[in-house]
Image (cartoon, rainbow, N blue to C red; front, side, top):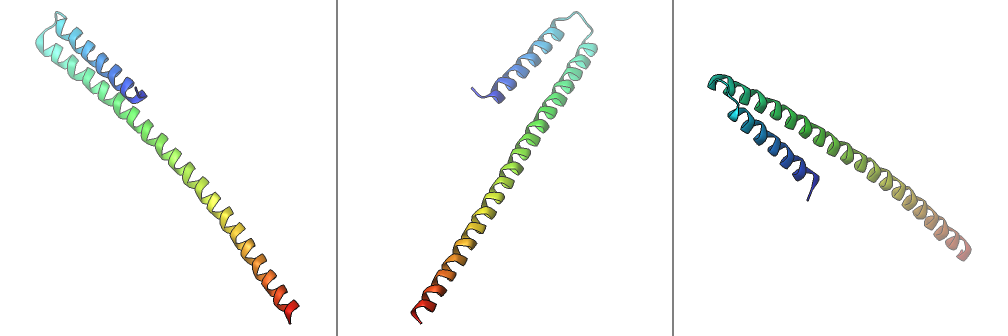
Length: 99
C-alpha cells in the first residue's frame, strides 16, 4: 500500500469522523452546517498544502536527475572527443610512418 493511499485514507477517516461528530452534536442546524463547512475548508486547505509539497518534491527530484544526466552527458562527450582526437593523431602518425 502506497504512502499516498494511507494518507488519503487517514484524511478521509478524519473527515468522516468529524462530520459524524458534528451531526450527532446537539446544536442548531445552521450552526452545525457552518461547522461542517468550516471543517471541510480546513481539510481542503490541508490537502492543497500536501499536494503542493508533493509537487515541489517531485520537481526538485526531476531537476536533480536532469542535472545529473547533463553532467554525465558532458563527461561522455569529453571522453568521446578525447578518443576521437587520439584516433586522428594515431592515423596521422601511421600516415607519416608509411610516407
